[in-house]
Image (cartoon, rainbow, N blue to C red; front, side, top):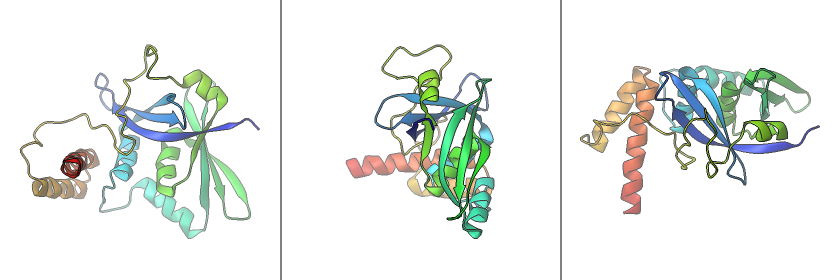
Length: 204
């Protein structure tokens, strides 16, 4: 079997040219090599909600999937990101109930959304690293999205403005309201501003 290379989730960048298009950024552990994977808004929202620990009034699709796996004592062992012949990224979900092991085909974005919920590692192959990765220290190849924030715990929030005048209490109330309204992108934006202020306060 081909060697596996572990990846870590760096964050998500927003394509400011094409509305509703995001890039999921994965980085090879121990290196600066990054792999951008284009995803849509629903997938970006599902990943943002988990990274930002947004409490939703009802479980999202990936939360339901994890709950179903847990009910049957099935564990997501790891995710393997692959690239199809047409250049589209896909993934294999490696599942186990402790006795039987199964591999389920998945979209790469869904696989990552499940992996971060399960605490499962994400891997890829040497071919994907060689063909699809880039080093941000090198000259950026045409067509690649801008490199994301280096803070691996945060999603890059593009929309800003209007938040600076709000108190932390107002931000919390607005975030709760956005979550209730299922506007998870706005909730993630508000949560990022709260975290930013807390980081400033703790570092100051």
